[in-house]
Amino acid sequence: MERRAVQAGRRICAAVAMLLWAGAVRGQDPPTGPMAAAPEHHVTRISNVPTPPAPPSLPEEQIIQRFAQKEDEFARARARYTYKKTVRIQEFGPDGQPAGEYVVVTQPARNPDGTSYEKTIERPQSTMPHMHLLAEDLEMIQRIPAYPLTTAQLAKYNVKYIGKEKVDEVECYIFQLKPKAPERAAALFDGIVWVDDKYLEVVKTYGQWISDLGVMRSKTLPFTIFETYREYVDGKYWFPTYARSDDTAVVEKTEIPIRVVIKYSDFKALGTGAASPEGTSPAAPSTTPPGPAQPTKPPVGR
Image (cartoon, rainbow, N blue to C red; front, side, top):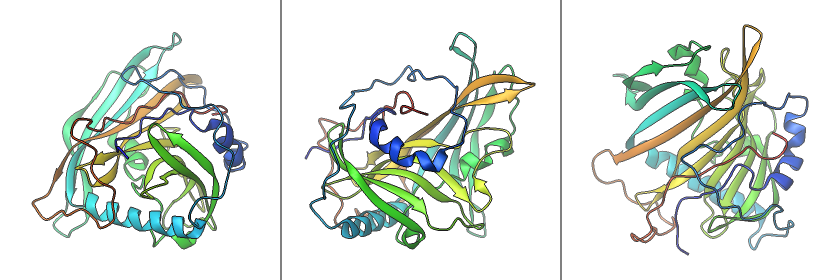
């Protein structure tokens, strides 16, 4: 199967995924933020109604164990890479057009004691007319886990198979994740994952992070639900490369539609020896290099 990055819209799988997940977010006000696709993206709509749920070809528990093991492999591999992370927050005016933005670029770095942090490599720039952000306002966004369902975390979730869908050129199983008991120490993922049905690798996630204090959110920014797409890097690993969330901020009693887009680029292995994990899918042909994920509007009901 020719592999390349998933190019799916935010409305893919809306009919089944959001109906089954509605209980997790019932009672929240729906975002009134901009709904139009980011201008650099194009969406190929596959289907408005996913294939009805049917038993997968492998036992569900085996699929879950396998894709959690792949999450372990990709998380370890990602730690052996450096990359550029661009966070762009946009305000939108009454006409629905961007009115200003805040942009900061970071890359992973380590302190002398071995702990990791986000090192700013391009000074933050802001043209936002209403919101005035500081570095600490982005702390929640910077703390979003790249891999929410590793084998070490698996026992903390109820995982339910809810159907199957073709996302771009990748046939996927769809699983719903619900934390069994929210914790104080670390936020857990509450949402949907799309899993390649051949190589059993997560290629897309949609959801929020919760702790025993509630949904993880910033004091300044309203973003809670993120749709994250992965890209095939170095012909070996599925790394998150694009995440997006739309919402509405209230500034001096004025509702302002805002959007955050997080992009990861310029992946470079740290030295040599970053071998492909055993059992991962083959590289996409060089004649069809994977492009970035291409989302569109939020799913129906969001």
